[in-house]
Length: 186
Ligand SMILES: *[C@@H]1O[C@H](CO)[C@@H](O)[C@H](O)[C@H]1NC(C)=O
Ligand SMILES: *[C@@H]1O[C@H](CO)[C@@H](O)[C@H](O)[C@H]1NC(C)=O
Ligand SMILES: *[C@@H]1O[C@H](CO)[C@@H](O)[C@H](O)[C@H]1NC(C)=O
Ligand SMILES: *[C@@H]1O[C@H](CO)[C@@H](O)[C@H](O)[C@H]1NC(C)=O
Image 1 (cartoon, rainbow, N blue to C red):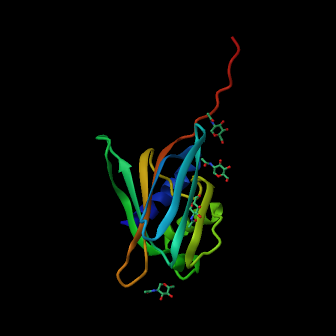
Image 2 (image 1 turned 90 degrees about the horizontal axis):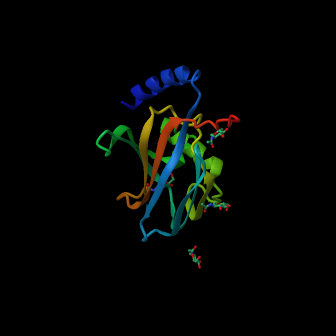
Image 3 (image 1 turned 120 degrees about the vertical axis):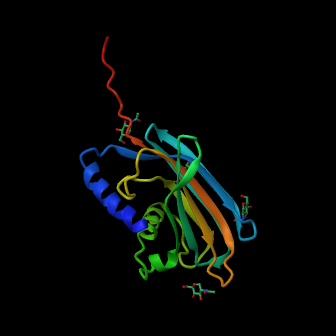
């Protein structure tokens, strides 16, 4: 299924070259840290303009972690409910970072994280994890149809019995870029 989506997205990517106006505006951000492992979690979103919001996320990790990340996409349907949308994958993000794995969604996630991260310790992650002024560039992400989506990231330890470290839920709107109209003089 995931592979099919990639093929489909590739096609859309070619197609959208002519359109080029799609933006993914962050709409909402919710963090649900497991207090056993994570403290001082902060998730903030600030609107910059009609097309763009930026996110600051930070937390403190009590222990060293080689996270397994589950990425799930949901799309809001006509009944206003989020329904699973094509992507539901789990990966060891350290394998992606250390280039032992080239898993598509892992590579995308790592590119975005790397761009905005101020985190010092990577693989294992520990102490402070900080993402500043983060946003989703449409050229880093496969083209999504228009609509409201939720991307859920759930973090697990790689212990024999994996423990849930928490999750981050990001809502975004895939929409045409809002152009500033030049005011015509009356
Ligand atoms: C958490 O935040 C409080 C208040 O800002 C600070 O005093 C404390 O040192 C922080 N704890 C950690 C583990 O970062
Ligand atoms: C995010 O962090 C930056 C840099 O520290 C700061 O300038 C900005 O005000 C923060 N935004 C929010 C919404 O907290
Ligand atoms: C939307 O983004 C574009 C490109 O960044 C910018 O030129 C335009 O002014 C923005 N529109 C609004 C309404 O802020
Ligand atoms: C977790 O991952 C790290 C790095 O790949 C590895 O060294 C460690 O043995 C793993 N732990 C378990 C319990 O598999």
